[in-house]
Amino acid sequence: IETKLPKVGTTIFTVMSQLAAEHKAVNLGQGFPDFDGPPALRDALARAMAQGRNQYAPMTGVPALREAIARKTERLYGCKVNADTEVTVTSGATEALFAAIAAVVRAGDEVIVLDPCYDSYEPAIELNGGRAVHVALDPADFSPDWQRIADAVTPKTRMILVNSPHNPCGAVFDAEDLEALAALARKHDLFVLSDEVYEHIVFDGAPHQSVLRHEELAARSFVVSSFGKTYHCTGWKVGYCIAPRALSAEFRKVHQYLTFCTFTPAQWALAEVIENDPQHYLDLPAFYQAKRDRFRALLAGSKFRLLPVGGAYFQVADYSALSGADDLAFCEWLVKEGGVAAIPVSAFYEDPPAQQRLVRFCFAKSDAVLEQAAERLKAL
Ligand code: PMP
Ligand code: GLN
Image (cartoon, rainbow, N blue to C red; front, side, top):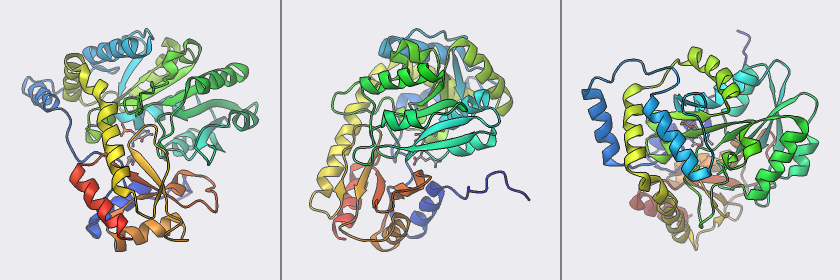
C-alpha cells in the first residue's frame, strides 16, 4: 500500500528494549522506572475497581481528577485554570500531543520542532497533513537558539512545539526562554504545544518554567503532562492537556473520537493521591536528583563524558573516547558486548550532526541496577 508514514519504522525504544531482553542486558534504554509509585496509589486503584468504577469516565475526565489538576496547577504555577472547560484527561501524553496537533494543524501548515525531539511529534504532524520544520538546539548545551528558530518561521508556521525538561537531553528552559518564546509566538501569532511531562523532575533547586507561569503564553498554549512520569506508572497511560477554553473545545472534538475517554479507575486513584499526598511530587526532584548524582558518580573514571542534566531522567553521554562508530552501531555493540542498553541520540534528529557521538541512559532505576550498569560501562 502507499504508506502515509514512509519514514517511520519500529521505534528505537521498542528495538532497544527487545535487544536488551534478547541479550539479557541491563536496560537503560527505553525510559521507564523499574520501581512502582506510592503504595497508596495502587491501593486506591484496587479500591476504585472494587467500588465498581469500571465504566466509561466522562469524555473530559473524572471531575475529581480535573479539579485536582487545576488546584495543583494554580498552587505550583500561579495559573488559574477552569477544571470544567480547560483540563482534559487523556490516555497518556502521547494522545494529548496527537490531539493538540490534530486540533489546530491543517493541510500544509508547518510546525517548528526543536531537534533532538521526542519521536511521536513528527508522525502526528504528518498524519494531520502538516510538515515538521526541524531546528537544531545548540549542540553545546541543547539550549534553544531563538534567533535560528525565528529564522525558520514562514507564513505557513502554525505552531511551535517545545519540551522542557527535555527528552533526551535533560536541558531545561529558564525564564528568558519563556520570554523569547512569548515574543516569537506573539509576533507570528503561533500556537504553542508545550510538552511538560517531566515537570516534576527539575534539579538543582531550579523552578520548572511551565508556560502556564506566563499569562500570555498560557493564552495560546496546549500544555501536556503525564502521570506516568510523576507517579512511576508509565504503563497506566494517563496524561492530560491544559489549554484555554476555546483551544480545549477544539482539543476535545478530537479526543472524543480518538479515545473518547481514559481508563476510569486510574483517574479516581490519581485524583485521591494528588490531593492527599502533594509531598510525593514535591519530593520528586530530590528523589531523581539523588539518582542522577549517584549514576554520575558511579561513571566517574569511565571513558564516557557526561553532559550536564538539568531535568528529566536521562543522562546523555559522549562515547567518542571509546569508539568512532555511529551511535546506532555503538548502541547495538553496547547491548550485545557491553551488556547495557542505551538509546542513540541521533534517533531524535531529522539530520543528526555527523560528528556527534551521544547516547542516552535512563537513570530511573533502582540503585542496584545503576551500579550493575555502571560496573559494565566502566569495564569498557
Ligand atoms: N513526551 C515525552 C518528552 C516523553 O518522554 C514521553 C514518554 N516517554 C511522552 C511524551 C509520552 O508520555 P506517555 O507515556 O504519557 O504517553
Ligand atoms: N518516552 C519513553 C522514552 O523516551 C519511551 C516511550 C515509548 O516507548 N514510546 O524512552
